[in-house]
Length: 111
Image (cartoon, rainbow, N blue to C red; front, side):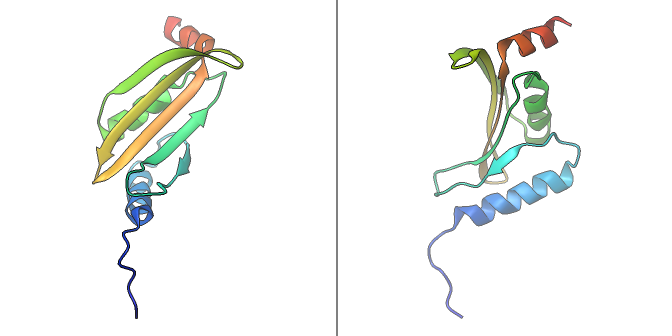
């Protein structure tokens, strides 16, 4: 059987994703994509204009470690809020990002 000598980052990232979701079944759902090259990251993203995304990303910070960075920006639909976690977990780079309207985040924080 011929083995492929070219590293395949998707294999490690896919294994890490299976482990993460198996070990933490209560994590919020994200849309996941595997890295296309060795420099890429396993990425989980969710966009929901009406729901504060900070708690979603915070849940992953608890499971993966790391610090959430956040910022507001003006998008095509108005003022938006973004929370991002970027960590290395079990030798795999992982980025988790949640985007919502700034109003959804502000309202959630004010309550």
